[in-house]
Length: 101
Image (cartoon, rainbow, N blue to C red):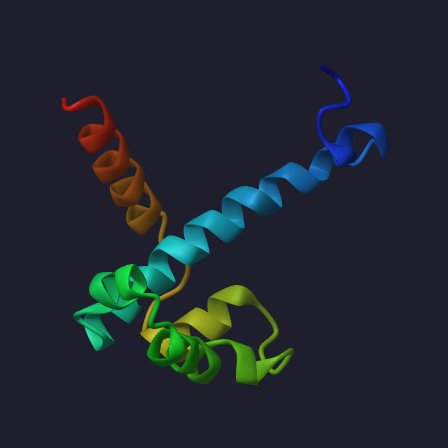
């Protein structure tokens, strides 16, 4: 229904694009984390998150508000600004596997 999400009732319609930005950023960070931690998927499967957490701390969390924008953070830490191609690839892989197309 119309109140299925808290932001609808608050009339905060502009909040929804931030979910997309977060998902796109997460896909890009996951791409680069896989480069630095090639067995990342296996670690996740085993519940071993410490190396991934350390990577995220080094690349993202420790910087706080040091950068003026997300693009500056990504450029400095992974070498490029936010790039939607990683999210598109994630969605393509996920739904191709899911629907076997």
